[in-house]
Length: 150
Image 1 (tube, rainbow, N blue to C red):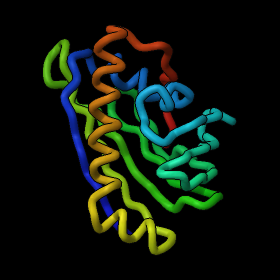
Image 2 (cartoon, rainbow, N blue to C red; image 1 turned 90 degrees about the vertical axis):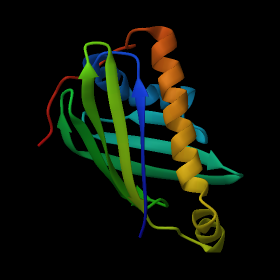
Image 3 (cartoon, helix red, strand yellow; image 1 turned 90 degrees about the horizontal axis):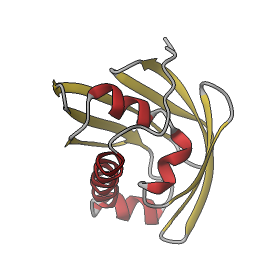
C-alpha cells in the first residue's frame, strides 16, 4: 500500500468547508480526473474517473462521518483499492485546515511508476488547491449533509 498526506488552509469557517466536502457530486468541479460521482445512499458513492486515459469505476463507502470533524471512506467494489480520511481543523472563525490522508494500492505497472514519480501526491495537492479556490470563490457551501456515520 502507498500513502499520501496533504493539507491546505482555506479561508472559510470549518462548517462551510465540511458541508461542501459532503457534496460528493460537486467533486468533478475541483478534482482532476474525476468525471462523475453518484451519491447512491447516505454512505455509498459511485465514482467514474479518467486519469491519463485510464478509465476506472468503483464504489466507495463512508465508514465514519462526524460533522465539522472528519469523513472517512474505503472502496468496496471496482478497480480502485483505497481508503482515506479528510479532517477539518478550525484555525479561527474564518479559516480551516483541511487534511487529506489516503492509502491506495497501485494496480499495475503504470500505477506503480506513477506512484514512485509522485503523481498521486501532486494530484492530491492540486485537488486541495482547487477545492480552496472553489470554496473561497463561492464563499458558501452548495449544500451539506450533517448526518453522522459511526
